[in-house]
Length: 115
Image (cartoon, rainbow, N blue to C red; front, side, top):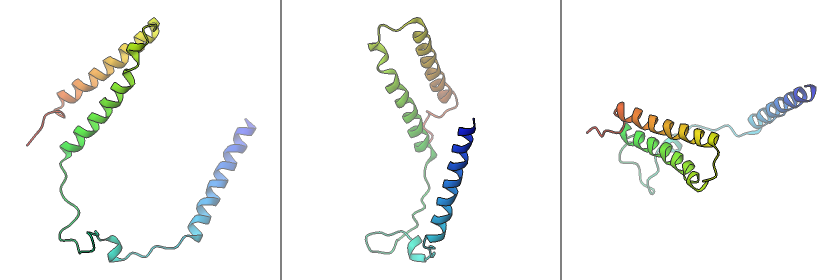
């Protein structure tokens, strides 16, 4: 217990020293108009870089990534025909959770495209 406390104190002390030294020796950034503007091939920006973004694209992308990663995690399971009963139960729970998430998104209208 004492060793864990010493490691914790040493870690906090070392990280505090590194943050303090980094803040002291870093160059203070000057806020300039040119540094905050958009650079387009040497020309001034014709319009703002802040354009409206459809949240529907974002939601479909996030849902795709989540379900794609889950399917990749499920791919080696059919190769393991030697699975025991407990592992089959966990895999069934995982598939049920995946289907529940899909139906939940469908029920809430996240998969329907709104124009």
